[in-house]
Image 1 (cartoon, rainbow, N blue to C red):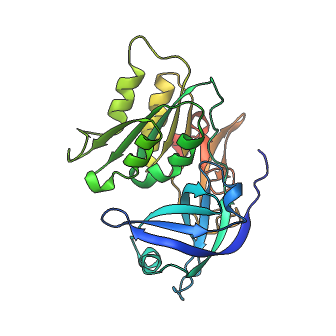
Image 2 (cartoon, rainbow, N blue to C red):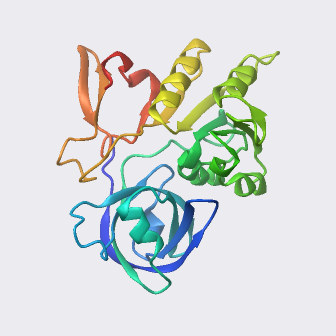
Length: 268
């Protein structure tokens, strides 16, 4: 793998606004970091007002515009609650861009099929924006408020197919169901590739489906990260090698892995 250039920078909040329900969009001015960001990479953020927090929080990078980048986050604990209370002009410490991201399709190459669960959509946007050909976005969530970025993907000209488990928006069911229907479509569409981000259970299912239909797939693995730079080894996953398998770090070798690389039988 190529070395990833990362920087630590004190960045300024441009906006920090509620998106839907408990989800927020945070835009940060980071002139050194923004030009380096590739699809699927993440940022490690220190929330300074949270005095007792020793660890940074990892967030997928959503959008990049000029010298700014944005993240989507959900308020789920003390760290994100404190983050949600910060306003325009306040500062955060950020290490980014981190990790190895998605492979952007080549012009005239495979048709991308993006699969996202919940705020996994945030990690997919730059991939869709920078792909030379449009594809299909399959997005799923428990309920309507868990469906994010639908408008942004449609604005890029992508076909967006929504499922919710309670049927409150789009089709009722799991996000894997319309994916299977598309892969079964006759006549089959050649040269497709699946890209996915979401909960581990969804990623495992997507990986198995891609293997069944002989379609290449890249998965952004959902693992808890502490240091974000490969030191603490809390985010390792089992990855196949020529002699069996070995642990690799999600924060550095990943978060994106080829689906066929992941040794699901050894995952926690």
